[in-house]
Amino acid sequence: MAAVDDFNWDDLRYFLRAAQTKTLAGAARSMGVEHTTIGRRLSALERALGAALVLRGPDGLTLTPLGQRIAPLVEEVERAVLAARAAAKSQHAQVRLSVPEALTSLFTQALAQQRLDYPEIALEIISDNRPPDLKKGEADLAVVVR
Image 1 (cartoon, rainbow, N blue to C red):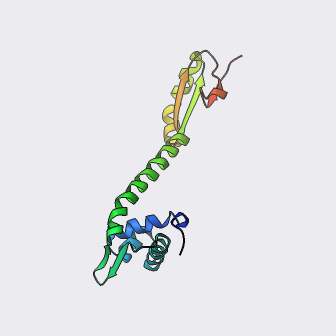
Image 2: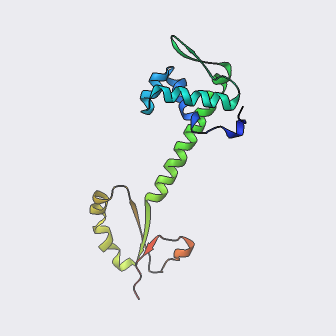
Image 3: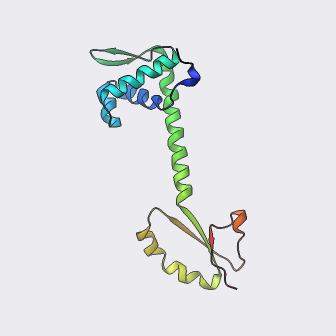
């Protein structure tokens, strides 16, 4: 038997969809995989945990007491993963451009077109006559006039 520390975290996603849809077929449809994949991943998770999480029956899946206990925990894991993904995505899409005050209008005039051409990038213009310290993260890019 595998140790609990050795279970595949990805199997939790399959368990959660199975718990939510109450069938292997429903979980498979929601994840875009075959129902046999759901069954195989559930079995692997149960083997790793050393306990059954679902009972398979003619009316679909029923959570065991352990399955009922961990389903809300797995939902929390999913929410945390989605939040982390959203945070990472928003971080990559943010670009801070520092420009001298005298040149700010040149860059702001092009913002509307930039948003149309690159909607995944949020451009923040920092207007300042003092050159930013890029090493300290004061801006991502800078236009410097010397």
